[in-house]
Length: 278
Image (cartoon, rainbow, N blue to C red; front, side, top):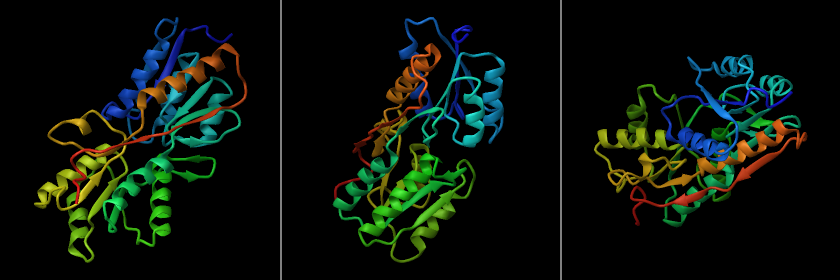
């Protein structure tokens, strides 16, 4: 019988990203007043998300909400046949399990169109290497990269992509190389806010400011809105993603719905100080 343990498992990659906190806040808000409690699980090491999900299943949770960016779809599918699961953030199109994600293609277009309208033509995309890129389950960074390349091509502009291993050293050297060659970038679009803040730190080390090169992130974390930073970004509405995913999971647990549902949430452009008017 479903609903027996009254526990919902929540898997997030780490606790360091405020966007994941927003998602958890949304989950808690939707579960308020119900009999369910949440159990939060974080992988003990990188690329160990599948084992974390299996541990939640072993704890007999009634359902799982997973920001499992690196877990292959076939592994998610196996788990879904035993325990209801909703994937958050990934653009999955499975016929058996649910997904909730931001419309990253349109969100990227919002950012690039804003830069284009400001007169920027040398726009660099700094991103992370996607764990996988498949037609049935696209990593959000893959979608943003595709949207960037599509936008640049459609506007007759040359794409320039810097793929960075997030958390590793060397970004300052990578950013320095961008400015050693002509034409120099006038704007940078980063794959998420944390990466944008790393770029901002690298620019500072190089003696550059956002008056020299405009900068846009993605997520709209709390730190992005700090008055000393003022990061222009694309808001993903993390709490809404969490609430929507929880609603879908509760439908599964109650047996109200058996067909897969895939929900896209439209993001919003948030303009701050890192994109000064020309």
